Image 1 (cartoon, rainbow, N blue to C red):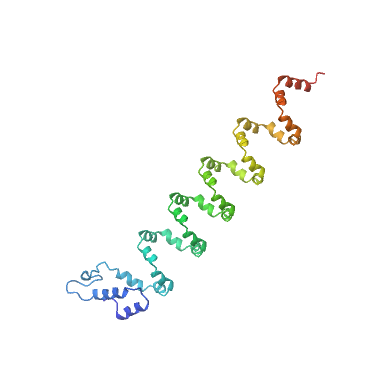
Image 2: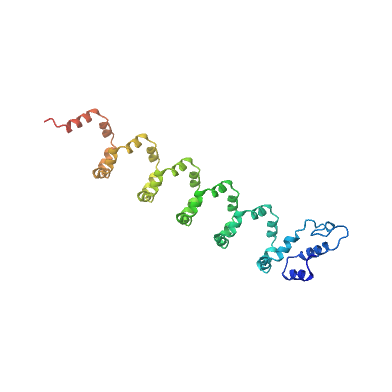
Length: 284
């Protein structure tokens, strides 16, 4: 026969939200004697055939629900229009039925994130919301390599590095990210060995090296097949390790000689090479 007056008064004492008094009164009258049909939970003569009253009664017997009713934060939430818009959103209801969402709610790391001011600033950033609507970003979230990266301490140190953030704002860097050659380089084991080489990092900190990178002559040299053959020549590498050669490179007279056309003509003269052969030959 529905709720007794004591139970109804008790429910009001618990601080139920506005409107439940009317709902309970309607329910009590709905379960009164009806001459036209057999009484049941939702008599048709009051339009309550689909009433969720059994669920509501279970809710009233739930201690967690009563704790919630005594929580001031919950009452503030009930007066928030944004919350009511959220309740009318179908996407929100799909989220409530997703097991992964409930696992997230039980995760302590997630709750720490909710208490982080930086996270809340991120939520108010329009760029972040654009990112959330980007399909490429969602593909990235499903990539195991990304999750390994997130667990890497070196990556987190990088995120705290101001130089890295300047790099992210550099248009040249973003062009590089869209270059297929760069991605091939990232998949090259030799490149990764180079990154772990201290000599390479010293070179990167050398201003002379950066000047060289900005020199068009150097780039022409890199595109020259003869230069690459020279790099593969053992004799050339022996020469580079020869101290006499390095002294010669620091000699101004040698550089003057290199700029002398007569010297280059002499190098192209077969007679000169023959004489050099004769000078090296012992005829005894």
